Length: 446
Image 1: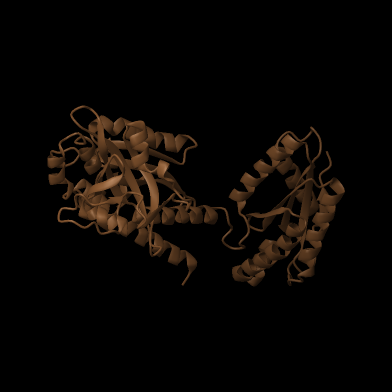
Image 2: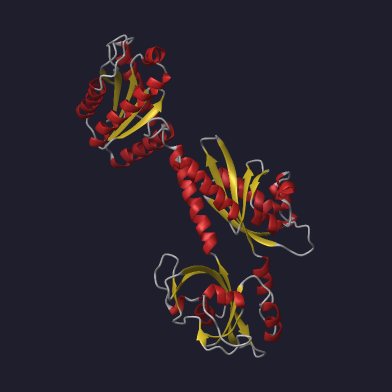
C-alpha cells in the first residue's frame, strides 16, 4: 500500500475515533469536518453542524475571544492557541470546553484551515464549584460523574474512591462503599512517572502540592505504571477539603484517563510533520523543492552575514530539455530528471552542499564557505557527472547526450547586498552560459 494512503487512513481513523472533540474549520470559519465526540459535546447532529459557522456555536460572551485567536494564528508566528470558553448549546445548562486551535497549512492543496481540539470541561467545573460541600453530599454525586474521584486524608491515605478511579488506577479498593481503605496515592501497586518516563517523586504529586500550598492545582499530567508494566496517562485536578474551622482535612482529586487523547495528539503531530515534509520535498525527484530552497537560501545568507563567511549559489539548467520531451515524451523526461537529480545530489553531498529542484529542468546548489575556485570546481564536477550519465539526446543543439549549463555566483564582498542579488547573479551567469554555447560553466564576475 502507498505510504501516503496508509498515512491518510491512519489520520482519518485517529480523527474519527478520538475521544475528544475534533473539528476542521475553513479559513472563513465554516465547518469542514467534525467527529462524533464533538457532536456529543455540542448535542447536535453532524449534518446540522456542517451547514453552520463554528463561531455561532460559541457563547456570545466568548465569540470575540475565539475570533481573536483565529486572527492571531493567521497573522502571527504562533503554532496554537488554548482557551476555555462556553458553548452556545441547545440546553439550558452551561457547557464549558477547552479549545486548542492550530492553523494547518496544506501546501499540496494550496489552502489554510484550522484544526480545533475540543475538551469538555463542564463536569470538572461543576465539581470544582462544589469542593467545600459536605462529604455526605459529595459521596452522592461522586459515583455519577465521568471522572475518577479519589478522596485522601492529610497523610495521603485514600479514604474514598469511585469505581472509575479504581479502573484508572488499576487497583481494587476493598470495602462495600470503598471507605476506610488503607491505601495511599503513592502506593506500591503503581509507580508514578512524568510523561517522559522520569520517576515522579512524592513531593511532585498533586496531593503533596495541594497540602504544601493549600491551593488547588489543575491539569497535572503524569503516568501511572502498574506492577505488570502497563502504563496509563492521567490528568489530575486536586483541591483541599476544609472542616468548619477552615483546616485542611484532606484532598479531593479528579482523575481523567488521557491515554487515548495523548495517542491522538501524537498521531496528529506525526501527521503535521508528514505534511511539512511533503510540502518541502519535490515529488518527482525526491530532493528539496523550491519552497525548501527559498528557506535554506535565506537561512544560509543570514548565517553568512553573521559569521562573515563566503556563500556560493549555483544554478543549472538542462540544455534543450523541451526538445528532449518533444522527442522522447514526458515519461522519459521525468526519468531523465530523476537520474540527473540522483547524480548531482551525490556530488553535492560529497561537498556538504544543499541541492534543490527549483522548477522544471532547473536545479540549484547552495554551498557555504567555498572560495571562487572551489565553487568553480564543484560546478565543473556537476557538469561532468551529468555528461557521464550519457543519457541520449539526439535533438540537442549542443551534443547527442543530455548536458547542463551552469551559472556560479559567490558572495565574497559588500557588493552583494542580499540573497536576491546573489540569486540574480547566479541566474545571469547561467543565462550567459546558455548564450555562449551551453554545456559549460560560467562564473558571475561583478
